[in-house]
Image (cartoon, rainbow, N blue to C red):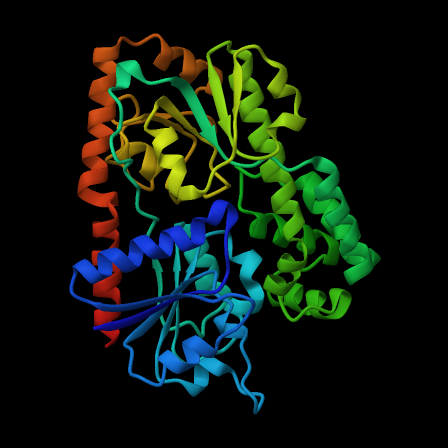
Length: 401
C-alpha cells in the first residue's frame, strides 16, 4: 500500500505536522510505503510531481486540498485517481468550505461521534466518515509519579476577549446586520453542555421563522442568503470560539482558587487574573513535540474539553500515555472502559465540579494514584497508542483499495 501524507495546514504549536509524522511513521511500520511532505507557501508542485506515481490514499489534517482548482477550473481532487482521507480535528463547522466540495473520492475522519453525525447530515457526498481519536504520545522517559515537578497541569491557549470580539464584529461587515444579530442571540442562548451548537442554532431559527423542518432551510436561504444551515453556522464560528474561551477560563479559574499548585502551558494566560494566584505557575509555550516531556513531569493533567459531546481530545490520550492521572470533563459514553476513580477522573456536567474533583484526587495517597495512573496507561496501551491508531487507519484504507 502506498500512502501520500502532505501537510497543507499547520495547527497551533505545530501539532498538525507532529500528528502527521506519527501517523506516517506507524503506517510505515505496518508495511505501507509512505511519502511524507510539507506544503509551504501554497506550493503544491512537489505533491503534483509525486502524484504522477500511483498512491492508494492521501492523508491530511484539516486539509486545503479539496479547495484546490486546476488550470481548467476543475476540482483538483477529481483529476487524480487517489482518495483523500481528511482528518477533521475540530468541529466541522470550521471547515465547511473544504467539506462541502463534492470531490468523487473524498473521505473524512473525526474525533467526536457528534462531529461525524454532523458531517453525515450536511456532507452526504463524503464516501465514508469514521471516528478515530488522535493517539497519545509517550515522553522519552516519564518520571515516577511521586517525584514529578508539576502537581496539576493544563496545556492550551487563552485568547484575549478583545481579539475575539474584533472577529465577532467582522460578522456584521462580512454578512450583514441580520447575521450579526443572529450571532448575538446564539451566543446568549447557547448552553454548550446542554446541546450542540448546531441544535441551538436550529432552535433559534425555528423561533425566528415560526416554522420547522424544511421550512427552516427556506428561511436560511431567503433571509440569510446562505445555501444551508451548515454554511450559516460556518459564518458564526466565532460563537463557538468565544464560548470555548469563556468556559476554559472558568474551569481554570476555579482550579486556581483551590490553592493546589497549577501549571499552565500555553499562550495568553499571562493576560488573565489567574496568573496572579500564588499557586499558579505559567510555563513558556513549546512546540507539540516538546510538550510531552513537560506532561510526563506532571502528576495530574486537567483536560478542558472543547465541547466534544462524544469524543476524546489528545490531551487525554497523552495523559494516559505518560502515566499521569487525568481529570477530564469528556463524556463517559465515549469510552466506558475509562472508569471514574479507576483509570481516570471526571468532572462537570452533572458530575462534581472541578474543585471538588481536584480535592478528592489531591487527597489520595501516592499508592492509590499510581494504581489509577497505571490503569489509564494500560487502556492507552491497548487502544490509544499511535500504532493502534495506524492499524485502524490501515484497515480503513484497505477496505477501499
